[in-house]
Length: 144
Image (cartoon, rainbow, N blue to C red):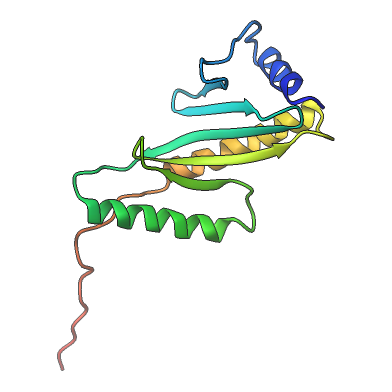
């Protein structure tokens, strides 16, 4: 199905008739007060879904690098079961989740399932502790 028609159908299903694209060209949806879903039509047969996951504090560069590495490693482990990819956006100092969706054979119901799965994965990432501990783990010492 045409990518723009899938977006239009989704807006109608959500009761957002007449919703217009943001100036950058994507549509921005808000769910549960904390989840932001952006959808961009990339031509006629492809959509890009993207969402901010978390901000990366810049006051401690080493801790920021560790946080990014930790999330990227965890994302690698999830790639086998999930089609979403995390990326660090240095201009905004944010981790962002992305997913490309080919729309050639996708129905409105199928797209709704894709969005639901995407939002569930976004909830997972937003709930994942991302702070890097600056404390060393306690040492277990046993004396005879």
